[in-house]
Image 1 (cartoon, rainbow, N blue to C red):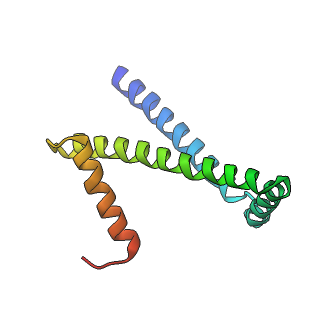
Image 2 (cartoon, rainbow, N blue to C red):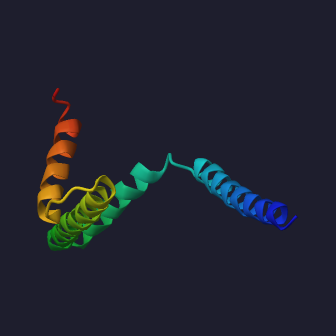
Length: 111
């Protein structure tokens, strides 16, 4: 009897989490996407009106932060891949391999 109650509680939690995830995906699907390009152009026009220095500073911050973000995501992904696949390589080597594979896939080159 206790086992049946435990199984029912576990199933209820899994079903609840799955339902919440589906609700979040449904809500994301209803977001208006058509105005994103217009917002971006208005933002860049606003920085350009402030002066070329403001636009250049904005671009510098965006590009600089994108490299930092890409490095962090690559290192974490390489660490997870090494741990899950049982690879005994340094994280830097795994990161380099991961970046080369992604560049190869994105560039459209065949193996």
